[in-house]
Length: 64
Image 1: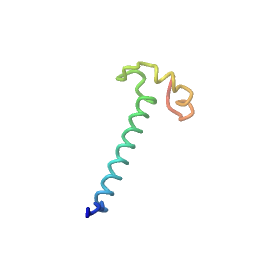
Image 2: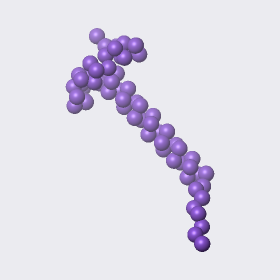
Image 3: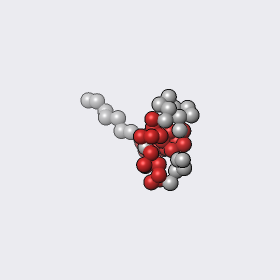
Image 4: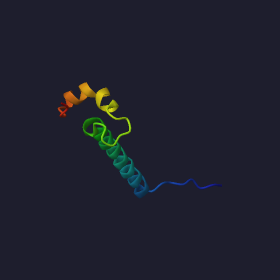
């Protein structure tokens, strides 16, 4: 008879923290690329800036 593995609260808590940190970092990276990069380091050049142009104005980000 096999004994089922029951995950501990510490493991669940660590996984939740790691997922949360990953989502926050991804959101910050996206905000930077769309809002502030303006082709400085992204290989897409001004493509992301122009693609998100109206959204930038709605968010109040400087553009022109």
